[in-house]
Image 1: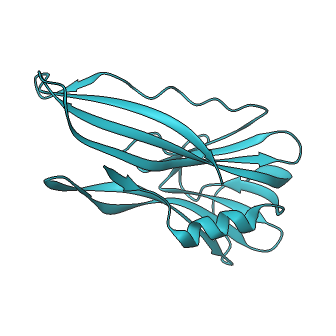
Image 2: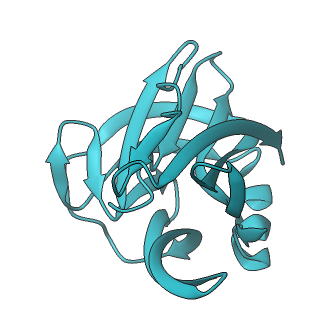
Length: 177
């Protein structure tokens, strides 16, 4: 099984965020409303926190692939992009983890299985949630959603590729930090 989980420094940064007030959030480059290319940011009272999906080499059985890896880093540099006002404290952080499994057809033997951190769910003091999610394993875009209960689209299941020689299934779980 291949795992692409967030590194220890990013997890420490997420723990540090609990109890901090987020003034606003956004992305330096928005490809669509609420969708940032590669990264989004959180504006705190002092400084910023970047939530990015940096493309890195991931080792799979028999091959390597460039995949988005979740990183959370502090910054004191002012961010570009239009801010979305927020004004609430972080009361909890949940990691959104997704699994992709490749099956070889027609035997349905598992070729490989990959778990990755695909996003973050920030619980806020006003009862809302802010979700940063990278739904694609191929395109490092950050979908930013704010609401009272943010639901994510279901992962795609039973996707076929290469003349139906490979089949993919996807699953999601959420793990409280």
